[in-house]
Length: 506
Image (cartoon, rainbow, N blue to C red; front, top):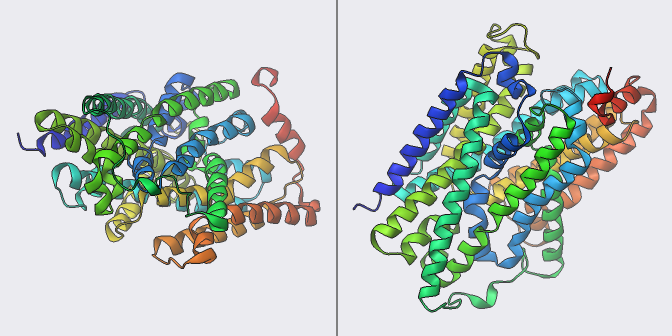
């Protein structure tokens, strides 16, 4: 059998099943509210599966094993941080955010502060973070198709972009919920089953130990010393706080029926993510035994795709490769779909509703209708696809980490203070968003553009969260205190709404 056939079959099968589930979900998507927030009726277990589907991105499926292969055990901070971020979300944000009744982060900001200017800045940030997160998904798709079937890297972004666009424009959030729930379980299966087989192979080989670069497998994130310590803590801050500011994560909590369901969803998500993240370290450890070729190539992101063929000969290796290829492709599709939904929602509310007539149910909530949403979806997907085709070899996990840093430096302070501090003002919010956005965003742009100075300058740019988050928080608090007269008149009433159970409403 041609070794590329299982991979090709896997890609086609995942794409067709994704489109089929999306088409099936279309019959439930009739109103504007269905397209934006699935009519706020998604139950915790289904929503948790969908969140797991969209959250476990290219960085999780491919990037973590590659980082562990190259950098060692200290890179476990990535999966730990991505999971622990949901604990922060559970304790501080999930239920109040759902009770706000908003569709998007800009909706929340405007409702809390009564400012169209703050809303506009939040809209720009949602789009920027969403696109920064989408680019590595499309790049990862190119890497996967090249490794699995030998296709040129430009094919991956086009295929994923096309499938995502078809699903998002056909059924919106209601349809994508079913797609992403399926894709979580596919990704878990595609990671778990080959891992079990490869462990059995390793055991049958006499349990060989590490034979490649053993002396360097437990170095800190940035090589030790003061810079290494700073980089580790900055990474932790960015990952822990960045989760609550990711637009495709936050929008999911608006789909729950109430605040209690939002909390239950978050607890289940923690369990689902923990179950998945047990397995990338297995691939990294086996890669240190069998993956010398991958390590020497400098393309550690392909370890999960290459390892089955390196350890299992013949048809068995090809079939395992096909399975992990299916999981990787599902990762790109599900995360890209969630990001496209989040960005499309914001663009619809603030841009395309002025370009397209209302569609669907005119009685739905929010600005703009289905037609405007579909126009926005095209914009949300096409632009990052073009950028991904133009930029090459940006580390998948690194790019996602930068998106977390920007989210942690902007929306995390806004949500924390907006939910828990009555004295936040529109001027204070703008000050924090601008300081955090320019700081972390500028560092992200410089890093992606290839500017990599050595020493402390390079560390501060590569991991900006440790300085950009405190600066944004201080700017937000200080400017609010200096403009205390601008405290919204409805702030006290709004906070009571956020923190009161729905059973007390009315």
